Length: 513
Image (cartoon, rainbow, N blue to C red):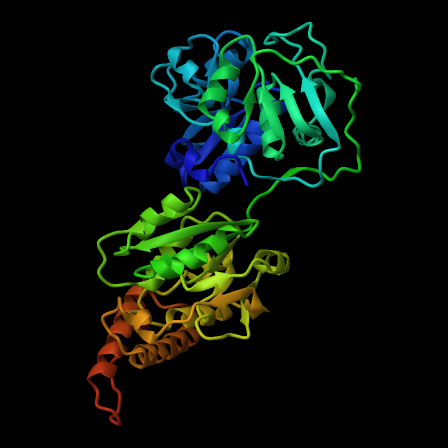
């Protein structure tokens, strides 16, 4: 897990959702590499497409340019400032990701984020946001094999140039990955390198931060790190430094960025009591994100979810008096950025072994359901995001309880996406009566809504096969409405008739999604 939840970084990245942006690197060390690794993780999490730029030949699709976060705003690092001045001539709005200022820099950036309150003195119009490394997700293998390590910087920011230590950590390692591995070796890291302290915290180690020669360290500590368990010392301690050269052994497994593989999408309207049981289980799954769709829930689902865990993405669909499950699922899927999505109902609880059992077996071109299907799990499905988009998502023509899930599975197989399975023991269903299933639909009779869906689905896919193409949304809406009207008004035992000859698909006027 990152040190701060995704919600803390939304003000930085949400304005760019769905856009293509350029990213310009500036000189930095392996600690700055932590920021960059987090930057690209967070861009992907917010569905932002990014290209690295190294010249003023900016592709036409680039809508904005991002400058890296770090601690080089002002005059202390002249090379970084020269790059920023050059980028300002490239003709795109510039956003500076969370930085620290050593001196004022009144250049005409479109937006500036700072990671500490002291920097607001030099840039009063800036927006306070966390250092992006606090949003980095990594996996750490192994336990520390050293006790306390005192590491002090040996450059122009040093406050303690003559104090004995194990050295400057950026001079011991050559990569950001090894920077993390080095921090992970120590039970307790004491340092004036801001990102070595952050590296220790990311690895689950104890960290104590010391001052550097301008207010950056103290201000970042007061603004963010103090609440994350970091400690502060004004002076480095006197330690018996028995190890003067630390190497990173090759037998320690790498610490690598972990990109979530799957997103749970859980719609909720009037099922908060179920969600309060199922959501914590979903949040405990490694390698997974969660999106909850509050479909005008009268119980305030969205507020409860955000109070439980701000890292959960909440989609709020307002002003609806009746539930529309297909629409809720589709709306949630639009914010998923992982390669796989899993549609859960609020009454499905994933067991602790779900992710470790299911994620390794996922293969493109296959969709997955529990085996065997037990009561309440028919709608549970795992699909590759690109396959879900290819089939067009759930058919939102369905009204009432049931049918949209079977429609999706038939559509997937129509596109030659094969069915697969995972053990049903990986999930559990919260038992309840049919009243809970239908209480937010106009039509309460499950058998009738299921029959409407079966007839509609049969005709829809028969026409698709005959025509060699899917029906337009307009044709599907007319078809579903006519099937529903015929079934609701025809007496049992009578012939069921409705006209489809005027559908656009027969006239050459078909308008596809």
